[in-house]
Amino acid sequence: MIPTHVLTDLKPDQRVAVLSRDGEIHFHVHLSSDEPDAVRSLAARDGSEVLATHLKDHAEILALVASRERDVGGEA
Image (cartoon, rainbow, N blue to C red; front, side, top):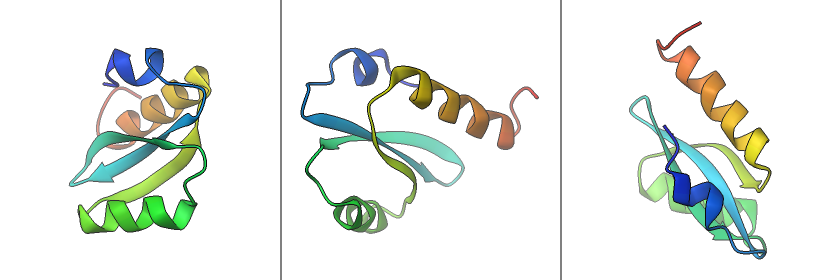
């Protein structure tokens, strides 16, 4: 489940990275100017896999989360 504030509180210069760790999805809000490698490096230090970075579109974020939840045993 994506926290509402991740979608509603994004500032114009912020983006969302969708991460996965131990089968759990989590999110990292980062600056739009951050390089993808910097986001991957941060995730790696946390033991996470980056599923996507630099997302802003709410529908795209929700669709990605929904597809991953189905992949890990949620509803098909």
